[in-house]
Structure formats: structure tokens, C-alpha cells
Amino acid sequence: MTKKIFRSIILAVIAVLILSFSVVTLLLYNHFSNVSSTQLTDELSLAVQGVELSGEEYLKELQSKNYRLTLVAADGTVLYDTEAESAAMDNHKDREEIREAFNSGIGESERYSDTLTLKMIYRAEKLTDGSVLRISATQDSVVALLIDVLFPMIVIMILALIMSAFLARWLSKSIVKPLNTLDLENPADNDVYEELSPMLTKINKQHKQISKQMRELKKRADELEQIMTSMNEGLVLLDKSGAVISMNLGAKKLFDTDERSIGQDFLTVDRSLKMSRAVENALSGKHSEFREQRGGSEYQFGISPIESGGKTIGAVIICFDVSETAFAERNRQEFTANVSHELKTPLQSIIGSAELLENGLVKPEDTQRFIGNIRREATRLVSLINDIIRLSQLDENMESAKEETDLYALANEVKDVLTVSASKKNVEINISGESCVVNGVRRYLYEIIYNLCDNAIRYNNEGGRVNIDVHKDKNSVILTVEDNGIGIPFEHQSRIFERFYRVDKSHSKETGGTGLGLSIVKHAVAYHGGTLRLDSTFGKGTTITIVF
Image (cartoon, rainbow, N blue to C red; front, side, top):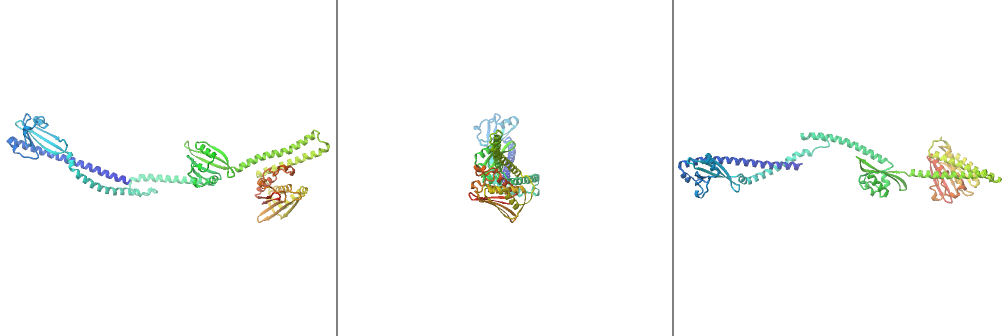
């Protein structure tokens, strides 16, 4: 702005100087032209008087370097000229000033030289004898006058420009200084030019509006940031070119990246073909979903376009960890298949035995054996159904009445119940510890000890032992069931608490059981907020520890 003011002042000075010099030159020229014309007219009047009195003798005796006198006869012949031989001169009858003088008594005209630097002024007057006396003089033209004053004008203009430059520089700085020191953060507090007051008032109003909008935007940004940070799901925002605008902590962990990915193309963060196609579809206005394994977990990705004003301006990627859901779905499918199989097996055995009895195909001495088979399979079927019901109740976290229950006393009850099955395999059951009371559902706690001990007997060796220990440790009650049986291979240890999972399916009928016992233990322990630990060595035995 300073330069603009400076240039404007200098240009204004130059324009004023040129205009001033032009006007002065024209005024001077007109003034001197009028003076010359008046003097020429006066000189002509004197010359006419002299010629009227003395004739040509007056002209011959007259000597003048400034004026030229010419006497012209009535027919236009030059009778006498003060600067040239009259005989050698052309007829002057057609000259403008001569013609006017013959017609009206007085004539005048002006003619420029070829270079336009000189102007000839003519005045003519008719004498009493019919002849015409003409006087002429030379005068500089405007062009000549400009040429004469050009150098002084240039000198004056340079001096004026130098002075104007200093003045313009000082003036421009003085004008701009208050503008440079404006406090735009507080426009209403400025004391500057009155002309700026409307603008500052408007700026102040806009400043307040912007401040309010900025506060609202910051509040929304903070809320969005808090939402994104607290989200367990991964969230990524992309612009219309596919570059990362924002990414929350969950997404950074999932895609194994950090803040350096902001501003980068998302393809540099994740190069999977599914993701690339999904992002491309979202930027073209289409929604995509797919599932994929990442880091041992299963994730569902939803990629949707972000639209504004009918145009796609970006995309949002939401990542859900659906490992538990997927695991539950697989378990449900496996559970349904296993239940169908486990129910079908005893039912087929019951139906087969019943058909043989019904059709009289069983010998009388074998009848009791078939009836016993039907009873055993029916009992197995009832046990299976009861176990399924218990698991369903535990899955649904159905509230049951809790009471103070002594685990040591429950262990003794279980020992009494399993004494018969233990004696069949010559397995010894030992109980150690102390009375420990737990606030829980007695039926579930009984199931925990019963199923652990039942498994320890089933998968034990002939003449083996099962040790049950109940004791306190600070604020916890610890239940341990240990056996020296066949043990569990390492590769199966992570799955033995799954429903219907068996380490050796070929011996499942020999050992009996529903395949749901350890699954019931796991869910019952979780229901009571306990923790479960398995320690097993194949061929040496198994120890299961539960901490309440």
C-alpha cells in the first residue's frame, strides 16, 4: 500500500507539472502574440502616415530589423519592399492580407514556416492612392517556444520530482503507519482515521461471529476427538483423494501405524486388495462391507462415502472386532451339530432296542439286557439334556439364589457320590484343606467339583488317585483337583473346555459322559467371578486350580 500511495503521489505531481507547464506556455504564447499583433498594427499606422506624406522616400529612408514593409500597387505589383528587389517579386494581388485590404481597407493573415518553428504575421492597409502598404514580422511558434523552455522545464521537473519523492515517501509512511498498527484482535479499540470506522465496526462484528463459530467448532472437534478416542472400534476418515484425515487409536493399533500416516494415501497404510476396492467404491459413492482376519482376530470393515451437497467429499472406515461374535457363531453351529449328534446316538440305540423287543426278535434270556440298554441310553439322554439346560442358564446369566456355601463340605458330598464309580476303577479319592465359605449358587458350585472329580476318575489309570484340596489364601478361596491319570496333550489343552470337545473321540463311549462337563465348569466359574488354571502333562496327570 505504501508503494501504491508513493506512485500515486509521484504520478499526480508529474501530471500537475506537465499540465502547469502546458498552461503557462500557452498563456505566455497568447500574451506575446497579442502584444506583437498590437505593436505590428501600431507600426503599420505610423508607416501609413509616413508613406502618405512622403511616398516611397519614407520607406527608403526607414531602417528596421524587426519589421518588413511592402508597397503593393492596385494591380498587385510590388512597388517597393524593404528587404528585397521589387522587380524580382511575384504579384501579391492574391495574398490573403492584400486581398482583404483592397476589399475592406484593412487585411491580416498568419503563415507558418515549413519547420513550424516560426510564424509570419501580416497586416495590410489601403492607402488613399489605391495602393496597399503591408507590414510583416516573424514570431516564434508554440513549438519553438516549447523547445526554448524545454531545458528549464526539465530541470524544474527533476527538482520538483526529487522534492516530491521525499514528500511522497514521508506522506505515504505517515498515512500507512496507523493502518500497520491496527489491532485487528480488538477492532473497536483502534483510534485511527474516521473513514475506517465503518470498516472496523464491521470487522469487529465479524470477529465476534468468527470467535463464536471457532468456539463451537473447537467444542465439536473436542467432542469428536473424545468420541473417536474412547471408541473401541477403529475409525478412519479419508478425503476425496483417499488421503488420511484422521485416525483414532483403535485404527492405529489395527493397521499398525502412527501419526505419520495423517496426510498420506491410505493405500500406504493398508495394501490389501479388499480394502483398496472398498475405498475405491466408497469414493465413487458406494458402501462396502467385508470380514478379514487381522492379528489373530476377526474384524468386520464398513467403508461408506461421506457426502456433502450431493457430492462425495471423502470416505469413513469403521472397523469392528467381531472375534467373539464369530467365535460364538462357530460355537453355536458346532454346538447345534454336536447336540444333534449326541441326542441322535442314544435315541437310535433306544429305538433300535425297542423295535427288536416289539417285533419279538429278542430271546427271552436277552430281554433284560436290551431293557437295561434302553434305561442306560435314556439316562444318558436325560443327563445330556440337563447339562444343556445348565449351560443355557449359565450362558444367559440367569440370576439364581446365592447362599453361603462351604466348598470343603461340598467336596465331601461329591466324594460320597463318586465312591462307587471310583471303586470300579480302583481310584482313590483324597480330600485335604479346611472349611472355606463362598457366597454363590450351591448347585453350580457342586457341579464344578463333581465334573472335575468325575473327569479325573474317568480319565485315570487303574489304581490311580484323585486329590481334592480346599484352602484359603488371603482374600481368596482356592479349589484344586489333581489326578495322576493319563494327562492331556499340549495341543488339546486350549480346547478341552469347549462344548462336546473330546481329546480321544474313539474312546468317548467307553468313558461315558456328555462332553459338556468341563464347559459347565468354565461357565460356572465365570459366573462366580473366579479364575481357572489348567496344568497337565501327558502321561503324568492333570491339575485344575480354581480361585474364588
